[in-house]
Image (tube, rainbow, N blue to C red):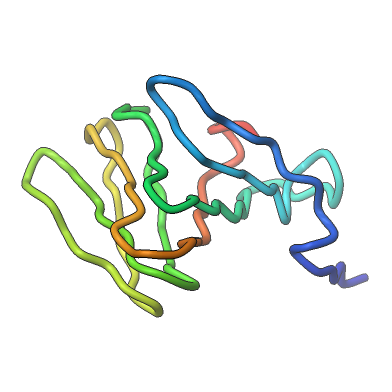
Length: 117
């Protein structure tokens, strides 16, 4: 059986502090709701001026920008991403996402189940 839904119907987890600002995370597909065994699909929304923490983890992830302008900072430099851009972040690579536009920005992030919801 297929599972379908709408992102706006998923209650977001809100992060807002010193290391992370103006971030909403919605787990669209994962093991706890749909029983996904391999991957987790998350939708992040960054408010104007919002950013994720600079961090690293042992799993890769794939990112697709849905709306707005996002800067991806890695050890190799800063990449400017806009709507319909995509990026691959390698395991153990230090990275941070920042809203670089004048409105909200959102991106889909896919990780393995081992990364946790």
